[in-house]
Image (cartoon, rainbow, N blue to C red):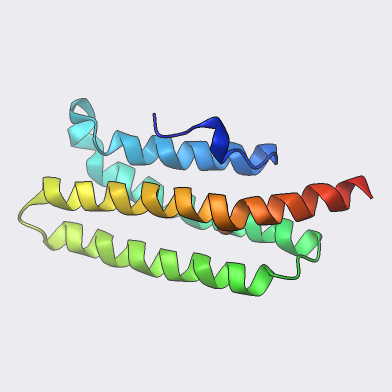
Length: 130
Ligand SMILES: [Fe+2]
């Protein structure tokens, strides 16, 4: 499992969704679920959109000053993911494409959580305590 405690933001809803994203990205590599790859990709794409929507709702509700640049990062990632999924459907080497998608999602998530979601969570939790 690629999730670790160090990725926790302290906002339960966001942490649960992050864990689900890692879980879904993991499914892609599970050979016993090979017949479900396309369904998993679709779920992943929809779940990413749902997760960003929910996270941005947290930003708005707490008047997060960095909401706009943070949202831009979500938009860029969604665009990149969409491109990778299109590549998958065109690819002759599907397993290489799956590996690319898995490392793109998990790599981006880890970096994004550590640098941006945690920064927001610190702001959010402090604001709740005021
Ligand atoms: Fe985020």
